[in-house]
Image 1 (cartoon, rainbow, N blue to C red):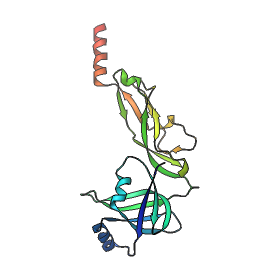
Image 2: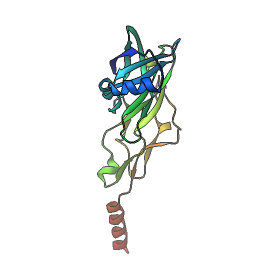
Image 3: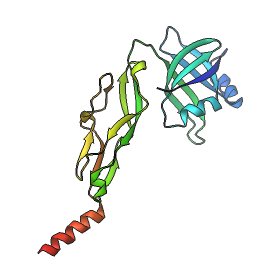
Image 4: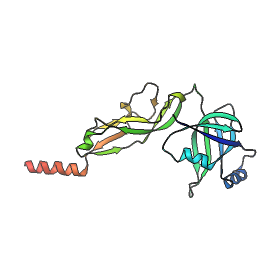
Length: 194
C-alpha cells in the first residue's frame, strides 16, 4: 500500500483556545493513539489535503518532533458549514496486529450483460478489509467479465488468502439490472410474437 510522509509539531497546550490558535495558523490539531502513549500534535492543512481529499488509501509515515511512526487516519472532524478540517485522529500501526481499513473497489473487465443493454449498478465503492499492515492492498479488484443481466457479485463471492472482508457476505457489490430500453425492447418483442 502507498505511504505518504507528514511532519507534525508537538502541542504544548491542549484545549479549545490552543486549537483555535492553531487553526488560525493553518495548522490542524491532531492526536496519535494506539501506541504506548497518546501524542497530541499539530499538522499542516496542506499536508493533510494530499491524504484526505483523494480516493487512494495511504499509510502515513508520521514524523512528530523526530519520533517516527506509521499510522492511518481513524477519524476526521470537519466544520459543518465550511468543510474546514478541525481535528484528526491517527491510529499507530503495529506490524503484528491486524487493522481494518476501508479499501476502494475497482471493477475489472467488461460485462456481457451491459453489452446487451443492461445497466451496471455499483452498490459498494469501498469494502472494510482486515489484515496485517504489510498485507493490505491499494484496491479490491472485482471482475465483472461474466456478469449477465440480473446477476450480481456479492461480498461472499470474493476470496483472499491474507485479507478478511468484514462487510456482510450477502451485501451486493455490483449488479447488472435490466435497463428501461432493454425492458421496452423485450416488451415489444413479446407483443410482436402474439
